[in-house]
Structure formats: structure tokens, C-alpha cells
Amino acid sequence: MIILNHMVEHSAHLDAVFHALSDPTRRAMLGHLAERECTIGELATPFSMSFAGASKHVRVLERAGLLKRDVRGRIHQCRLQAERLAEAQAWMRRYEHFWNEKLDTLESLLREEDKSKAKKVEE
Amino acid sequence: MIILNHMVEHSAHLDAVFHALSDPTRRAMLGHLAERECTIGELATPFSMSFAGASKHVRVLERAGLLKRDVRGRIHQCRLQAERLAEAQAWMRRYEHFWNEKLDTLESLLREEDKSKAKKVEE
DNA sequence: AATAAATTGAACCAAACGGTTGACAATTAA
DNA sequence: TTAATTGTCAACCGTTTGGTTCAATTTATT
Image (cartoon, rainbow over all chains, first blue to last red; front, side, top):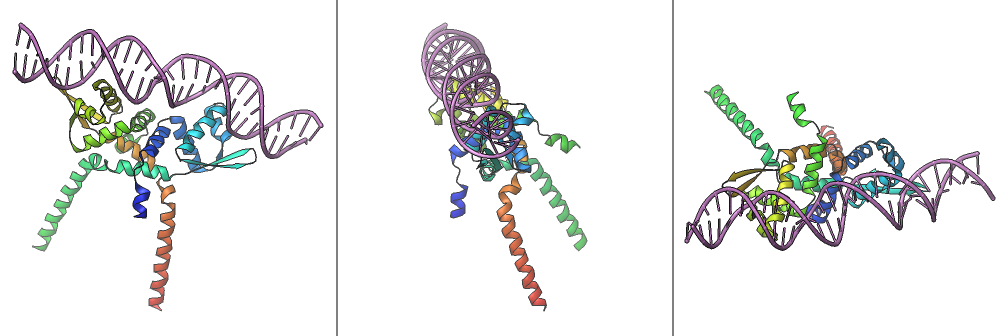
């Protein structure tokens, strides 16, 4: 039950997460955060973007729950928080069989082939 | 190589796909399309939304490559096209180990436990 | 104590969003 | 032929977006 509550599709979460991911700058920021913790400044510089601009992006990621901020003095250390990505992926999983269809078919064909081979060996 | 080209992160695609998914109405539309093909009207009615409104949402999904339209006379049959969702999920997979970390730890702990049990049995 | 650095806040901008309405085009049914 | 159905287009509306600049605030450095 606990695990189910964890998995509940909270639509507002998904809105925020997918929106956060829809911007290439923010996706790149997540990419950096996947490798190490970053300050706002470190997140800003690769994009030759103002601090204020980066700050806004970080807030979007934060509100989506994709990033946790740790204020140490004047420095804001940001680290990735990926649980919400898991929710998003869980939502997507419902559609997995659509793009796996062709693979699935191929797979079951191969399995059939194996079976008939096995039969022949038995004979 | 072919499979790599298929997997390339085409950023513009991801922008469009994630943006399309960031709206609850559009996600619900995809939900309907997952069960059966729908006309624009059928997609519109559950949300008590104008045809024109639904039409716009459908176009967003179409441009994101999540939906294919089949015009039969005055009727536009829409069906799900999930390949682009696969791209999005592929992008997310890079972050999987972050939310699996705890599970991974638990798993390896259990494995350790099993090993030591096995040892005791050996002794 | 004065200065430099890291960050936010507020005000602004043009563009895009999600939605509506009303006119229009095309297809189908009476 | 007329009328109804299905859908798009264009114009509009208020809100949000991604970005800027500049002033203010807090913390470090010298």
C-alpha cells in the first residue's frame, strides 16, 4: 500500500516535471547535476546566461522537485533529486508496449523458432 | 550504428515531447488514444472543450510526433504514435540509477546476507 | 571597515500558451 | 438542394514563459 501511494500519479507533479524537462537549458542543468553538485553560478556559466536567468531555471527545477538546494552562506549548492523523474517514467511505462510492439513480435518469433529446434533435438 | 542513430538525443524532439506531456488535457487525450483511435470530437467531449480547443491540443501532440492523423472525409481519425515517448524515456534512463540507489543498496545488502548464509552452510 | 562575490527581487519585454468565439470549408444525410 | 456534422482558421483574451537589467541583500575577503 505504501508503495502504491508512492506511485500514485499526481497530475500536478507531472505537469511541473514535464514542463521543467521541456526546456533544453534545464535538461542540460540536470545533466551537470547528475555528475556533481553545482552552485547557481556553475549552472549559469555554461550557457552564458545571467545569474538571474539561471536562478529562475533553478527555481523551476526546484518547484518540480527535481533539485534540492542547500544554502551554505552565500552559496547555494544544488543537487539532483530524481524521485519525480521516476514518477514521470512510471507514467510513460503505460505506453511502453506500443513502441515495443515490433520488438515483442520479433522476440516471440525467435522463441517459437527455439521451441521447434528443441523439439527436433528431442525427436 | 543504425540503432545509435535511432537513439540520438534530438533535443528539439525532446522539447516538443516534454512540452506536449506537460498539459493534463493532452496526457488524458493520449490515455484515450491508448485504448482506441479517436476523432477530434471524441477527444474534445470528455473535457467539455470547444472543437477548436481540442484541435489545438491535437496539433501540439501531432507536432511532437505523439499522434498520427488519418483524414477520412470530414473525419480526422487520430491514433497514438509512441516512438517519441521511447526517446523521452531513453533520455530519462540516464537518471534511473539515482532513484534506484536506495533499492540498489537494499538489494546488495540482501545479496551480502545471502552470501554469508551460504558460507555458514558450507562450514 | 571597505570591497568583492553569490544570489534574489522587481520591473520589464516579446513570444508562446490555453482557451474562447465566430466565420468558413468540406463532407455527409435528409 | 438544403441542412447538419466535423473540423480548421483567424482574431482575440489574460497568463505564463524565458530572458534581460539594475538595485538590494547577504556573506567572504582583504
